[in-house]
Image 1 (cartoon, rainbow, N blue to C red):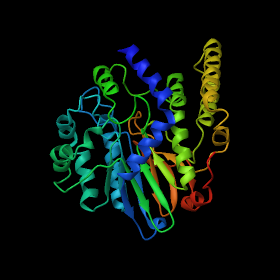
Image 2: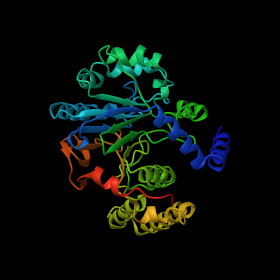
Image 3: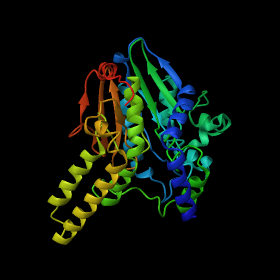
Image 4: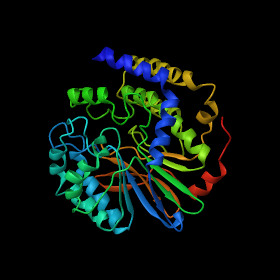
Length: 360
């Protein structure tokens, strides 16, 4: 099985890559829901993603964060936000699409709270690769609709929020990603087989494995960033579990985390030296494939791509808020909502209009 995955991934990169990505983006944006507004600068939208709800057992990545999630939803209900769930909300792959058990586990708690947004017509759903079960409307009608109060609902690959001048695109971001895209049968079977063993919650950001994981997803982030830049839209994605703000390059994040490791008092000199060598190699490997074509984007990315992160962190989750033209990356933890050490950017839609460029 391991050899088959390596072969499929290699072939996907060689023969797919950007062509696969663009094809999927064309397909999914055609199927996208479009929500029109008189003025996007007056709208309030919060975007959660990658919740990965399970059946409440030991493999369930979400159960320990459920109270935090419900507190956050209470806050956004009171503030009259539109709620967007941007894919991988249920962990379909890991549980072999046993959605009845997953839905039943959270029917009277998290899903009940979500239904309050749905009643107000302020509830939007996207599917990602791990909950591609919702591709079929009959599955939505049989399982999701009853849990949300039996009011009709559709799940989309993407959502456009538009007014006469501005466009916001919310998308899961797995489009064309080898072994990580919607409907990948081989990857789905591997996750189902190994879930809870090799697919546990990812380690903390300062650990080597997590940073290596992020650099390997950089190819996909670059494609999304370039797509948004060319069209002058603001894009909020998900999928990578890593929050991005103002298209912040992955290497800036890595540099900061390396400094934390070097300053750590818990590491021996030998461990620090080992980490230095490791991170040097990771950075060099990550830069090589895109050094020439995308150097401009890597060094000075336009502030149009954002990522909401995930809800599976240890006692925390990150979300993207758009509140009357101001976009924020927000963390929720047991103490509540915080923007400490996080950023905000005003008049984000005006910025997007100015950066439309010719093909790189």
